[in-house]
Image (cartoon, rainbow, N blue to C red; front, side):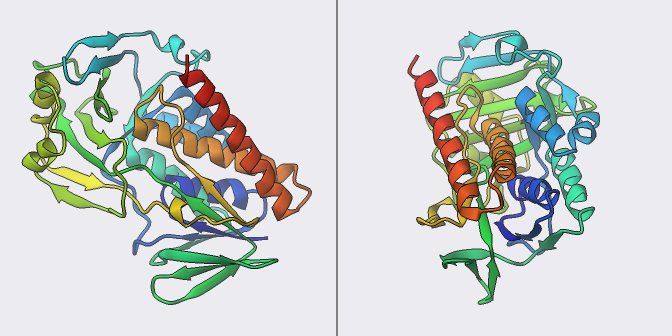
Length: 327
């Protein structure tokens, strides 16, 4: 079966590894001229690490990551501590703790896994702008006018637009605890910082939960970052002022292109609001990829049955999360 994957971010590569490993011919359509990770940090929840293990890259990522032993939540306006919980309160499997890594430490093992599969074709410079479904196929339209036909299409939903930078640990050691993962939470935004492997740098990021868009990478100055968060409190604002060389990065959200049909599925879109948005996005994307792969295993080779089973799984998961959030 020929499967088209729109987007060569973490979700697209993970989907390619999972489906290519099952013998499908997978084309990963990436809008950028090269497959590149970002110069930023990423948090890996216990569930994220287990899901990476299912893709065969868990050990490679763990070897390049840093275990986080202290997790803190702060009110981003008042500066008060909201919680400081042991990690077992977040995940019952204490053998798989929270970790942090450079984005490249996650992206490169997935990219290597794709390149090792003869069934996966990486197609840079291929921006998907639309798609059309037929009875037995799906066609994607690219920005350069080309059209590519496949048996199924997977649309990826990458993380929202995020302001990010890294700060040398020596510059902030006397200002706040560089060893802890700390989240400053506002009404519809948060700021996070956590140490990266070797403790030389701390990853610092700020995100609006409703901010998405087709932003691949833009430089941003400190004034622009502060202006984007006008209601931020004094202490959280001071955290942001330690950052220099900010970048505003994101990815095209292919989800709005989804129309009714039997041959298109979506992966990604955070649902676990226990975690900050970009952390939850990585976890949910990998969970969706795992569900997509297992749904294929019980589909008896039918695309319609495959995607119907996957959609039912997503709906059930969303309902469970919604029920949990009411309590």
